[in-house]
Length: 434
Image 1 (cartoon, rainbow, N blue to C red):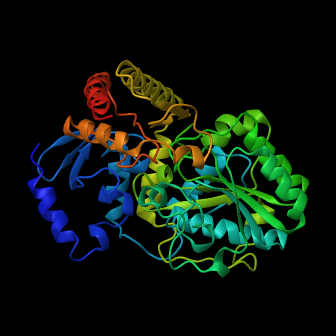
Image 2 (tube, rainbow, N blue to C red):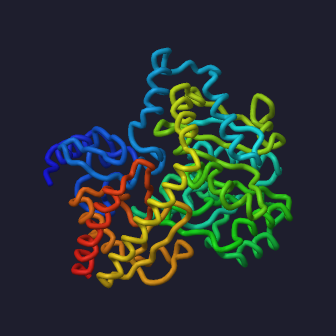
């Protein structure tokens, strides 16, 4: 596979951009080799600057749920851009997108748009502290909630990939009000609330962690979190930046939480709600959300928040995410995941295939992964071999062992066959490397 142009552009990028990338995992440090520089994508496939084509199992880390360059999203964006790119003022698209989010998640009354998942979570935490008049936030090791200082403690994803348990530049004062527990540990949650429950403003959790690899919540864990915080007068912040409107029409809560009989107090959304454009949101009950300025005293602002192009793309994406689309996503994820697991098993490669809705990932270790400590015990070298073999065969996977995999509705039966054929070769290459 010729990657001359990608190599050239990456060498050039490193002279002007730290590490040559605008987000760390893209640098391929965890898997070795040269990151690909992509120039186009249609449906399930993307093409790099050297003309190589790949079946995409990253999908911009989730937003391309309908596939690349979906006609309805293109039409919405093109018709909006003709009238200007931004006003820094109210526009109808943000109203329509907010209404669509609230329709899909009826436990929410209000939504506020921001420009990134990090910003949504940062605002949610501030709002929770204001609503409860308490300071402490409880999070779980391996759950990544963006790179705001207070939450960049025992995070997963890129932090795990780079081997940085915390980040330089984050002061002790910024994290002194953050308590970190092991994920899926019922007793630890019970214990901290018995000890300091009157000081805790909120628990924040990913609906299903997908930034240390895919680690599903133990049965009843999310309901237990909701019940516990409400018993002690605290709030539950459910981070659905990845799972929101990808797992189902109502996100993780719509598929699981509603049936289990629990609600979060504040939800954060991103990825899918922008259809590939930079936008995120937080949503919740009116009595909490109306604490935000201008209704209340909690300040938050952003020049590009609710941008008309991003909200148009997001609205078109959600409008085309029908029940049939979710059924196909679930089926594609199930067939691909199970098929790859079978190939690894046939090659005698130890692994744990784990799912959460239509998100999935593989840990190259024996036994279930239920928390971050388990995830860190995997054989990342084995993953690198598997990744690079798949890449050479035209299958683009997340370039880190600590990430979830994403399918799109554009994946075809032929794509699935190509992925599984490549997986057999990659599994044998991985076995040979052990």
